[in-house]
Length: 350
Image 1 (cartoon, rainbow, N blue to C red):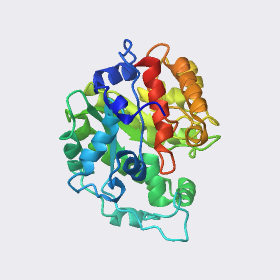
Image 2: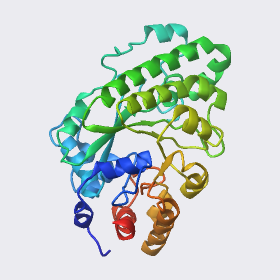
Image 3: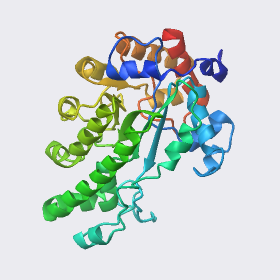
């Protein structure tokens, strides 16, 4: 490799440039970077620290976390904290992503559940500790870990939710309303924090060919919460980013025109390449990321540079795009391969 992390860190954070691409106003002075998530193991390997063995309450946790992003040339620190809603511990009998953490099966379960007060839906202290580590020019892009669909599908299980949509619609409505109120309460506080420059929400709504819920169910149960978050963000003069995996073709117009999201992250080549989204929706929603994770992990330097430059040329011609992966920085991703992506961004657009 012909570059080092020091070369990325030499680019001082300037969140105003990231805001320009989110709000689609003017051209930024450089190509911003954005990621939704980096695994603790990836951060540990990149920083040469035991970050993957640290708890969020430990002294150096947030300092390492903030410096990790800024040393890679980011203008922002992406960050999310879960609701104070306990889930059942996983066992070996259920798959991790669907039925492993079920806590609510009936209306009695819902009523007995130890719901947090809306005054303290998440631990805001984590954001305050991260904010204390920010240098001038940087800001947090913050939100609640998991969105309304992910919380409800974890609490009920995909199977339980699917049956309840027919057999217990009132329970489904109550649960989505409750989770939505807690997320919105957290969003209101986050939007008011000076260190948070934009709100975000991660909520994986689909799979390779469709959404998990019918589009009308998303419009009824999920999108009202997104719309509240967008309103909270915009009232505070801050943009809103949605991260969602899966095929959302049937609801992109809803997200752009009714919900009013400013930017979208997570683009998989087999579902919708980022440059196609740019062509079809880029005048209303800024695309973020889109460089294939598998290519980064297994491709050669030449292949990674060529594909990264292709994405930049297709998406940054008007200045409204941020470079990053199509999903996240994983445990198995080689750090040096990811640095190629960022270095190509620096070579292309500063």
